[in-house]
Amino acid sequence: MNSSTNPNRIYLDHSATTPVHPAVVETMLPFLTQNFGNASSIHSFGQEAKVALEEARRQVASLICAEPSEIVFTSGGTEADNWAIKGTANFFEGSKRHIVISAVEHHAVLDACKYLEKSGFEVTYIVVDRVGRIEPERVAHAIREDTFLVSVMHANNETGTINPIREIGALAQERCVLFHTDAVQTVGKIAIDVKGMNVDLLSLSGHKIYGPKGIGALYIRRGTQIDKMFHGGRHERDRRAGTENVPAAVGLGKVAEICQDRMVKDADKLRELNEELHSKITQRISNVHLNGDQNRRVPGILNLSFDGVENDSLMLSLDLQGIAVSNGSACTSGTVEPSHVLKAMGLPKNLIRSAIRFSLGRDNTADEIDRTVDALKGIVERLRAVRKGKKLFTTEMHG
Ligand code: PLP
Image 1 (cartoon, rainbow, N blue to C red):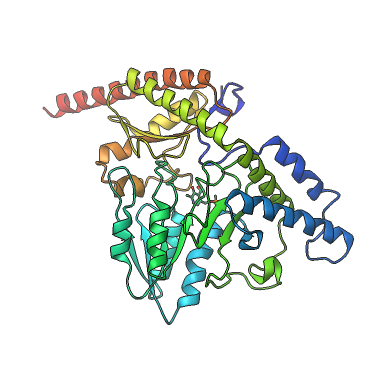
Image 2: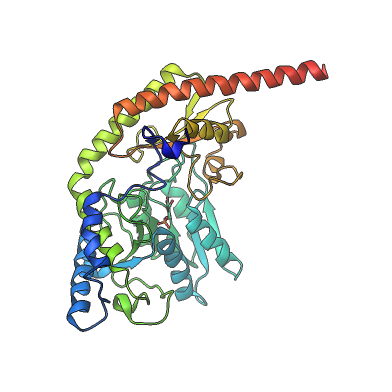
């Protein structure tokens, strides 16, 4: 049976994306049908859309303790990251030209910086420790006279490791450098207070938290020096041109409200399931290594290496049994490139090539955890045996 027709499929890839919450769909629907107005129009259709858009902005702001006027809707996390990096670079071009980022950032940050390097900007890539954490002192050392931006992700999408954002933000503030954090993997999952975290810019995305795809936001602290990226109409208080995606923004607002209500309960459940998955795997399968911080991790993310197994084969075999996991970020899966995150953590090649990310969601069950561990045990044993057989065959053939 093809896994897409298997009713008993198990989805353990919630850090890649999530299903849209039914209440979110319900909230969005009228804005795709009868309330279809353009939020910039002055007639009643437009004004209805505008009111809904502003309510969504308030809901998103409330989730991260910001002012509604500090939230600008974007097409997702990638746009928010690109804007934070390139928008500040454009603003400071000619006066400052140095950026500090971590070596384990998402490609939306990394590649935006690589792009800027081509036009004369300089980027320092901060190394991480063995669990993927960024030491604030390293950031402090990297800041120069001409640094205009520090960008360090709140939590890593492959390992779930949470960074000391408040401390890094305070250091940046002390040196009068802007601070951006990519919080795509944490917003809606753990409490965020942008003021308390000393953040000037923060990226978030809807589809990681049971909202729709193609919507996110950039938090821009009032007074932050940043250029706009899109030019055209005077939408979003003249900060981002383009007719607003009202249905998606309304969906993001609703999901922000839902997350605020159930964040603590969900996090408790996810930590419990995660712990169960981890302990059952290590009890039943040998040579398994945890990649990431044992204690400071996003609830629900578990990155493990199964020594002696190729992660591609492991993922495919699991998929054939209807179990969806990932080898890290959705953006790098499908390519053969080894994870830049695990590489930066100093993992040896065999552990990088055998790493799998499980990312649990609020609807996963203890039964699904048991079925996953059963399947994993069988697959890992088979793949290890095949590898051993291959090695034996090669040795016999070549003496
Ligand atoms: N940043 C991080 C940490 C992510 O995990 C992702 C998505 O995987 C993104 C940015 C990009 O977000 P989006 O898919 O909304 O463009």
